[in-house]
Image (tube, rainbow, N blue to C red; front, side, top):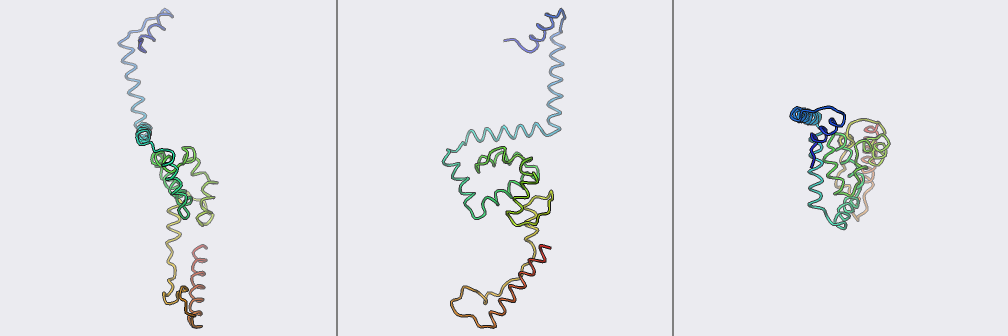
Length: 195
């Protein structure tokens, strides 16, 4: 089996030139080291290694199609499961955890293309998810999950447990008035938080 040095020497001989095999091998090794160093510095090498680990793990664990479908189905059947999954994917893409996305995608039945950061972070995709979870339509680069937590962190007036609507007894008019006042206060607070 001919090595790259032998092939280069043969090509050079065909042109009437001579290649010093030791010098060629030294240049080739130097080039390989320089490329490897550059890939390490830019993070590409670690990304390739992580992707390789994920592929090896997926090949070793490879669930049956029924098992994979049931995991994805369970995620999506949860109340607001699609939105929750969308928020997790948006968060991972926003903070640059693309390797985690590569591992997550097959586990929940998503294609690699659907979790690609360019697609996840596209304004149209984020706008739809923003609408789905009830966030105001203000574009930002902050992960939507963080925005949702920040938006939901506003203190909401607590209702008095004695004003429960689950009681089978008729409520006195004073309790009904208190309940209506509490509802109005809560609605006003939500409207102020949205503004």
